[in-house]
Image (tube, rainbow, N blue to C red):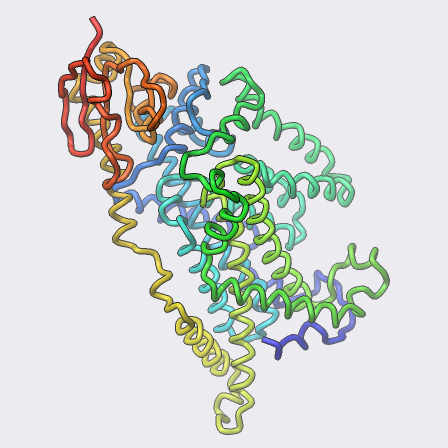
Length: 540
């Protein structure tokens, strides 16, 4: 990788950035490409519904809240932490009734596909100026980065279940690229949408808005409007639905029992056992090496990009595409590591620290790692092209680039541990997704077997396994709080529910709730449909 550092240090005459015709501005269609990618992602996500599909815990709650907003009867108590981004869409989908869950799944999965596409796009954008004209090293870099995101911990399953982190990651990368293209107002607006999903993004989006205020006086009305709208969308519904502005913060500090927040050192556990193993070691290592090499190259070239003083650097930026690409991979890699550290700090403070919160960091680290591998492939291509024993390669940059990419790919695959050990277990993931889909189907079938939601509610109080509470609330058409979760081990036993929807969170988990826990109450088995057994003890 040290061979191409000269590309960051070559002294060239300053040229206007608008005159740049290669490298960093290597793109197709600008903003229109996002629309095309989004439409393609929606089509592919729509076809994914051919596989048995269902939302998971949080997405079911978002669907319930969207329906409640349409009926002007929002109740947030009893569900997960409030976040505006998904609920904006579930509110729009609510009038479509039973189709709303699948509509949200299509959107969430399309967002994940867009995240993969954007990782590929940003990686190739940064690799091209460093790898030169041969296309193979650039494509290799994009494939490695995008593939690393796909196989990162929980990415496939979480997005298959309808979580929103994939969509948020895609929005952040789009905003990042719009900034690189000089479309700062668009970057700020897209960043606003992403900040509706994760409050941690405020730490970047807010200062960027202040920068835009200073840099572009014409954008000040936009900055003021979005600065005012963000807290309204985050805290207004919380006040409406729970009576407290900060109910979401309080709920977020009551994580599940298996959360890293309960470890002896939550920060260490989150960072070392969840974030760090989430990305392939060969990608993280390449990211670290690429950052160091790029930083060294920029330092050697400091005379060119600091010429004229700090003010000129801020306004004009780096002088060459390779310098801008080097700076971009440094920013991406350090931002990814910084995101992991931030999630670790919040876990130490008592928040849940779920693996899906780490996706943005994994995407950014994968970008830097992919660029590093593309850079290495370019170095191998240059070495092969200079071999006197290979005159054909010396005269064909494309052939040398392909040979370098193949050599780098072979090294990538061969590095221990073998790549096969890091690939997602597709059969196991498919079985888990199918089982969750059976829960959705069987809950609806059980309610129909009992005569419909009205008959179930007429019997009395309802209880089910904790992770199925929002799904059953959606199926019954009630607030989440009207469905009780099975009591935790060691917790005081609540009054006996009238209807128990007994099931397993996963196919190998315990059946919950435990019916015999309420001694002296005689339940009748009212339905037994695959994943659910329903017991009744109706009130008079």
